[in-house]
Image (cartoon, rainbow, N blue to C red; front, side):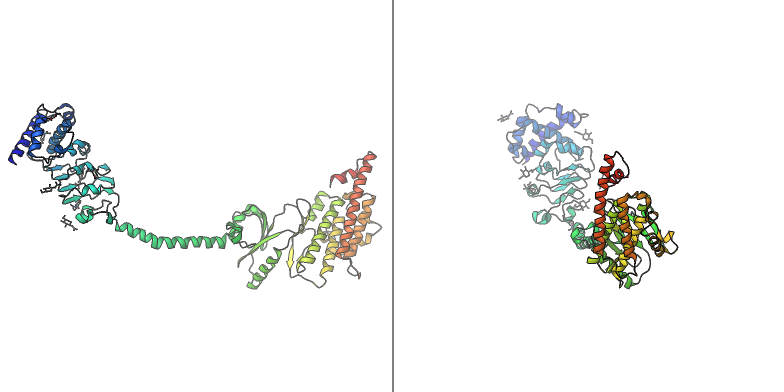
Amino acid sequence: MSMASMSSAIFFITISLLVSSLLSATIVEDLNNLRPPPDFNTTIFNNCLNNPSLKYCNSSPMDLNEIFKSTIVASHLCNESKNPNCVETFPKIDLRNRPKITPLYLSFNFFWKYCPLTIMSIDLSNNSLKGIFPSDVLLCNQIQNLDLSFNHFSGDIPLLNFSYLSNLTNLNLSYNHFSELKISDSNLFQRFNSSSFIHSGLLPSHQNYTIKTIILLVGFPLFVVLSVGCLGWLCFARPDFLPRVLNRNHKFTTWMLKAATDGFLKKNLVMKNVGVSIYKGVLRDGTKVKIEIYRDNVSRENLRKFVEECKILVQMRHKNLVQVLGWCSNRRMRSLVTEWTDGENIELWLAGSAPSWKHRLKILIGVVESMFYMQEQWPQVGYDLSTSSVLLSDHLEPLISRFKIGDRRSNYTANYIYKFGLLLLEMIANRRPSEEFERGEAGFIEYIRMHYPGNLRVVIDERMKLTENTFDQAKLGIGLGLMCTDQKAGKIPSLDEIYHMIVKVYRSCLVFTSENYKGSHSHGNAGQGHKGIQLR
Ligand SMILES: *[C@@H]1O[C@H](CO)[C@@H](O)[C@H](O)[C@H]1NC(C)=O
Ligand SMILES: *[C@@H]1O[C@H](CO)[C@@H](O)[C@H](O)[C@H]1NC(C)=O
Ligand SMILES: *[C@@H]1O[C@H](CO)[C@@H](O)[C@H](O)[C@H]1NC(C)=O
Ligand SMILES: *[C@@H]1O[C@H](CO)[C@@H](O)[C@H](O)[C@H]1NC(C)=O
Ligand SMILES: *[C@@H]1O[C@H](CO)[C@@H](O)[C@H](O)[C@H]1NC(C)=O
Ligand SMILES: *[C@@H]1O[C@H](CO)[C@@H](O)[C@H](O)[C@H]1NC(C)=O
Ligand SMILES: *[C@@H]1O[C@H](CO)[C@@H](O)[C@H](O)[C@H]1NC(C)=O
C-alpha cells in the first residue's frame, strides 16, 4: 500500500512540475502544448502494478496521450476546486457557482473516463447548465456526493448508471427541469428522499395531479354545461343555424329577425305606421323577405289566435299568393314574415305604365285562379282584392298579399265576386272610386252603369287604344263587372262562369292582336297593332 501511494505520488509530482513550469498558460494551451514525458509509459505501468483499480489500467488499448491529458485537467481542476495539496489528494470537484468554466471541464470526457479515484464529491450546482444529464460525470462511480442542483438540465436521467454508484449517499438534483419519473420505474426514490429532488421535475407533482383533477371534475362538467347551454341558446334564438331537421319550421325568433334586418336598421325600414313597421330583410339562406312588425300589447288569447292563424297562412301555396314564410310572436310584438316582392301594386301599375288590354286580362285571369284556390283549399281564410293590395311579381303575375282569418261571412262567395267585379271595372276604367267619387264604390259603379252600354268610350281607359274588336271585348268585360257588382239582381255569376268568360275574351284578344299585327303590316301601317304585339 505504501509502495502504491509512493509511485502515484511520484507520478503526480512529475505532472505538477510540468504544469507549474507554465504557470500562466491556460488549461487549453496546456492541453495543446504539453506532451507526455518519455518515461510516461513506465510510470503508468508501475502505477497499475501498484494500484490496479486505477481507471486507466483496465482500458485497452491504453491511450497514453489521453491519459496524460487527463492528468493535466486533473491538476487544473483540483486547483480550481481549492483542494489542499493538489494533486496528491483530490477529494472533491467543487465547481459551485462557476458557470463560466464548468462547461469546459464537462467537455473533457477523457478526464471523466480516467476519473481519479481520490474524488469522493462532485458539486456542479448553480451553474445554469443546459441540456441533457451530464452522464460522463457518473463515470466517477466511486463518488459519495453528487450535487447538480440549480441548473437547467432537462430530459431523462440515466437511471441504470445510477445503480452502479453503490457508494453514493448524497444526491441533489433539485431545481432542474428533468422529465417526470414514474415511481414504479425507479429505486432512486428508495435510496434518496424527496429533499434530493425538490423542484427537479422528476417527482410526480401532486399539484399537477390536483390541477388535472380539478380540470376533470370541474372543467369537464362546465364544458358540457356550456356546450349544452350554447346549443340550447342556438335552438332557442337562432334555429336557422341548426341543421334543417332540427329547425322548427316557420317559427322565427327576434334574434333571427334582428339578424335579417341588420338589427332593425333604419335603412331597411320600408314603412312605418302607428303600431306597425315594415322592414325589408335577408334571411341566412339569402331569401329576401318582408317583415311586418306589430308592436302592440295583445292579450295572451289573441297571441294564441295569431299563432294559429299563422300556422294556416304558411301552408297556403299558389303562384298568385304572396308566400307567407313564418311568424314571430312574443309579449312585446307580433311579426309576420313573407316573401319579398319588388313589384308595385295594381293601382300604381295602372296609373304608371298604361298597360295594354291584353295585359290587364292576363292579370285578371291570375286573380280568378287564386280565388279558385282559396275557395277550394282555404275557405276559412279571407283576403283583400283591392287594387292597392294586389301586387305584381317580376313576371307580371298578380299576387294577393293581404289575408284575414276567421273573416267568414254568410254571403262569402257573393262578397268576393263583388270585389272582383269592382277590381275588373277599376282595371278597365283606371279610376279610384274612393278618391274620385263622392259615394265611393257605389258612386263609381253607378257612374259606369249610367254610361252602359251606349257611351262606354267615356268610361274606358283611353290609353289602352282599343280597336273596334278589343273595344267590344272591353264592353263585355264591363258587362261582367256590372253583373258581379249588382247585388240586387238575384243571380250573380259563379267563379266558374267568370273564369271561362275572361279566358275566352283573352284568347280572342290574342287572335285579334296577332291578326291586327299581320294586317297592319300588310297595309304598311305600323300603328297600334304593332304596339300590341310588342307588349306581350
Ligand atoms: C508501454 O510499455 C509496455 C510495457 O513496457 C509495452 O508493452 C507497450 O508497448 C508500451 N507502449 C507504448 C505506447 O510505448
Ligand atoms: C493553483 O492555484 C494557485 C492559486 O490559487 C495558482 O497560483 C496556481 O498557479 C494554480 N495552479 C494551476 C496548475 O493552475
Ligand atoms: C448562484 O449563483 C449566483 C451568481 O451566479 C449567486 O448570486 C447566487 O447566490 C447563487 N445561489 C446559490 C444558491 O448558491
Ligand atoms: C465503495 O466503497 C468501498 C469501501 O471503501 C469500496 O471497497 C468500493 O470499491 C467502493 N465502490 C465503488 C463503486 O467505488
Ligand atoms: C450508462 O449505462 C449504460 C448501460 O449500462 C452504459 O452503456 C453507459 O456506458 C453508461 N454510461 C455511463 C456514463 O456510465
Ligand atoms: C433526507 O435524507 C437526509 C439524509 O440523506 C436526511 O438528513 C434528511 O433529514 C431527510 N429528509 C427527509 C425529509 O426525510
Ligand atoms: C438540495 O439542495 C436544496 C437547495 O439547496 C436543499 O434545499 C436540499 O436540502 C438539498 N438536498 C439534499 C439531499 O442535500
